[in-house]
Length: 164
Image (cartoon, rainbow, N blue to C red; front, side, top):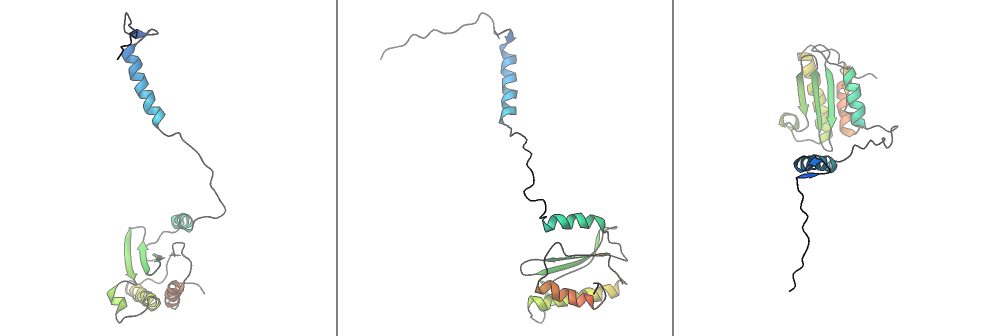
């Protein structure tokens, strides 16, 4: 094999273009870290007229605050279950909680729609025990009305929580 004679660059002092080499090296490393970060990209919303139910619910929730005498009724319906709670926002306490998963509501065995109705009845009993005659707001977390939510609302509307 043949060896190549390559000229080696040698500097008389350790500066490049009047800048010390170590300073140039440090700056290049910090610039490199800045270059590897992603640039800030501001994108417009896709469709501002159609708003997410969760976003709408969070905005409305700021306006209504429950107290011990007039708590906020928060209801969430998942794909299979229903969860309801009375919330005192001033003291940050949950006054009542029930779901269709609780064994006391599921005995005797029943469908989830019947269990949702029982949750509403338990809520009415808890309200009479706590001397609650009115709720500040009915918060259904942006969920559309289904069979379970409808059965729950029928049970609590007989007590006068829901208008109409």
